[in-house]
Image (cartoon, rainbow, N blue to C red):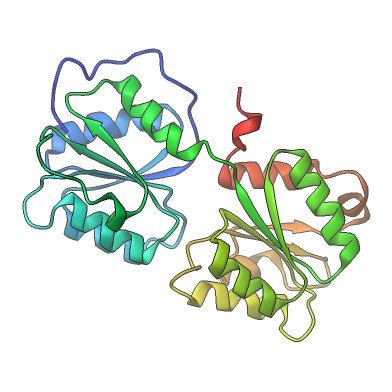
Length: 266
């Protein structure tokens, strides 16, 4: 990234609530970009080099949606960082930043990435990040009850989300690894493998551990604190309202965690 007069506030595109890891070895510039991104509603983690960034990827137990990294840095470069990060978090979106245009980008090795040429404006930065995040939000619903699957799927698709479904824990774990959804909704009452055991398995698996999980639980089941301690991102009470026509609380919780689907953005 470059400290340049083009880094001036512009009329920004739509903002968000997702988490970004910003990797830049120049502290002043890193701070400027962090402050701007935070002003748009994003949660921003920062690192001065690739080694620090990898420590964050390994230790941070919540989703990181976007990696913004300089390609040229002391030590491990941005391309190598992106490859290593994607091994830990396959659903990660990547923005590569550089002033050097003569170096070919190994896009196949790092997955789909956006390239941001410096110097760049705040507007360009915001649009690049948003273009990666404004995709159809994919969810996975793991529930034994067909009635619940139909009701929750109707609510989510009605709000603009793509929904995969699984009717037991084994199928849910398999589908989670295959589809890498943005969010998992998990009923605690499941045959063979309990919902709690599915939650624990998701959080043990390096491939799925960063996917946020909303647990659908009745009051008689494990308490909210217990579920949060096991790695749940949130809990929504199963009730007649949820299964009939009042999905407002559920959709609000989903939106708070993964954002609105593209079709719902103004």
